[in-house]
Image 1 (cartoon, rainbow, N blue to C red):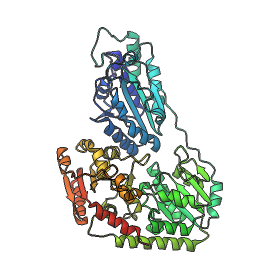
Image 2: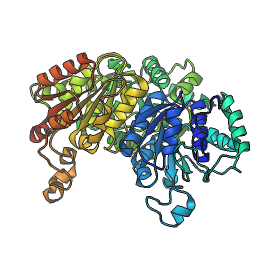
Image 3: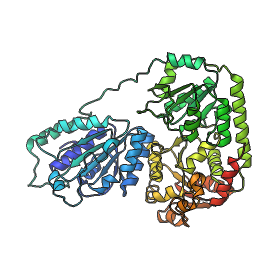
Image 4: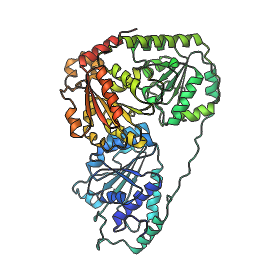
Length: 576
């Protein structure tokens, strides 16, 4: 049959229709994990000339890889797995995608209901497994000749349109699972005729028209901005590069002090003269509170800084305006007075050429001068010949090339970049998993982002994050764009030593710090990844320069003495 990939039996025919309809909707990259029950999907993906199959041995890594792809491409990667616990391994990435409103589409093969109800091997109740963490679920029946292929295609079109989080399609398949003719389960002639008509078309069965975004009238916001005496512009995680470019231009035109979150991609785009750094440093927080802004305009959400929410916003700011097109309140401080449900770029266009000079320009200038002075003092107090998290962030900021992407792992890594000053003025795309801030899946997400964007990624993460995702190193060798992993080995989860738990040694070690004596040279060698060790700042610069010049993926292990890093932390904390 011309154009029909697989029609040998009803199961593989349904899988072919599903895969083809997803491809017609622009979802052509499939992250496939092995299994027998999903053989119809595997066969359909392989047989479809417009589908791209990515082999993933581990479902948890596959899900984070698809998440990285979605962050880069702006459309879902499709996950395909067999029945049973394979599906459950997607759960951490599903939660992250839900919280971050990143698109993800899951195709899970299932046993038919009679086998599930009979407690057959490798069966469980799969429908609704992700509960409220899925935007939409489609629980298909086992393939049935009485169920029209047009209805199947229409349902796939509907679920493929959900672009703000994960969706799940559960598909029970009966034997035979492979594309082989089986006299016991022939495809009825009328279904074959319907399939022939389906595969002759090129467009989706149901096309969903795109509706232009509606933006609330910003006149009230404009008036607040115009009467502001001491303003603060805060930029968090934005959804698109268009938003980032618009926010950077707006920040320079507005001229207010700007706090760019580490994950905003704006630190390298906004004028350094206007930029603040994280108020999580005690001295920085004092300066923020002394400035005492009367208006905070926040573009985007998900700020890394705890004290931005708990101290600055909750400290009595008169007007807090939050602009975000993400669902939910996105307001941990419960201080937002005006919530604009819009993308940053659409809001800025609607605002127009608003002239919003600050009433107290001297206060803003003094605030910026004091912040820059404290930043210089912190840099001077940070030993230049010893590796520490602040020094590593500074080296990467100084050396990462324009148009590259920077993935920041959670815990110490992203906080180091949040506390760092702006990198050299050039566009850098920052990536993070800050929806629920898990430490798993970092290597896989970085790989997926590199594949989806075609950009080289520098991924900076801690040793425990690296160990969590060790098997995802298998993805790097065949990655379309290089991923340079800088793993900071301070022999455990040392962020807890910088929190109140340090005063409770019986709690701290080993249950929280999880200390270890491993290095990662053999792990890199096991997966055929070039490896360099760095114990000093100069060695890190040399190793990073070599990795950038090689054009290949690499692992750089930056070895930190945990006590030395803690002393640097204490020294910096006491600078005023």
